[in-house]
Image (tube, rainbow, N blue to C red):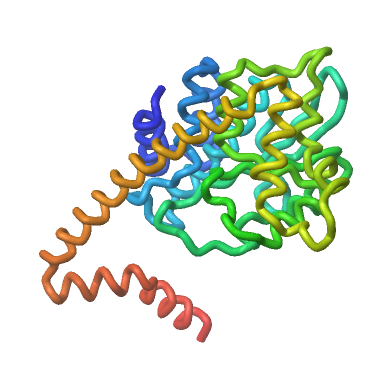
Length: 291
């Protein structure tokens, strides 16, 4: 299964009235959990970018988000961590995992963003929520696209250090899969999940919000833990950046085509589309029911 085929499956299931959201999620999970490591690695690289043709707040977008959770859980399985997708969506982490060798447990949260959405704030990353969701678990791991993390200093970095939340990316996970990394008696992956606590020992209060703590120091630590040349990680990340640029060009073409389509609308059609986009009919209906 490649990303195009996964997209098609998500779209079909989102329109399948005969299947509940939960059943659709189970179907997608069964397919993903049967994938081999190489196929999984390729999907992991793509999943962090939400396609622009998926409508906001649609059933398809919700199912796409669910799929990110499933891919995270499957990736943890490949890394030797027993992980499950949490079906309780309210006020809890998406994924829970446990090490069968070392006995620690972790919570994970998967994020995906649209390339067109450049303005993000700390609430989008839910680092503070991760601290709460960790509860009695040992570690909390946030996974989102590497190049969607704040490029300048941000409170999320300080929050992660204060609450011991591991800030990883889909690109990191793909790198680990490509190295055939798997937890064993000679490799305890808690070294990575615990990276914030380790960084906090050397970072001053003044510097705790710097992005370089994770994106430079953290990457060096990960490579040292895995006995991997740091330049190898940087080389992979450069390739990931090129893939994102290519993906961005495709998404731009989608919007260019959509703009041309909109230009053909009649005035009446354009007004209907605007009313629908602003959800004014639904708001009006809610007001009528209220009164």
